[in-house]
Length: 63
Image (cartoon, rainbow, N blue to C red; front, side):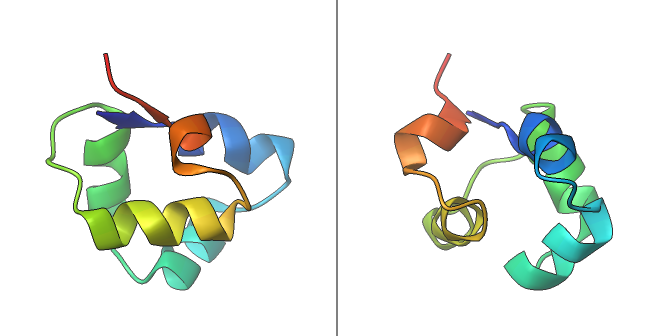
């Protein structure tokens, strides 16, 4: 499962650092999620979706 943080952050003019601080995770974790190299934990998915004010199904790709 991949996240759309890479797409959403620039659209909303949000720095990666601000997203990482708000989501309370590491930049490495976000990069791994973006690249599909890490298993997504539900609590992180919820925090990401809330931060970007999106539904989970809009923020993640299950391919």
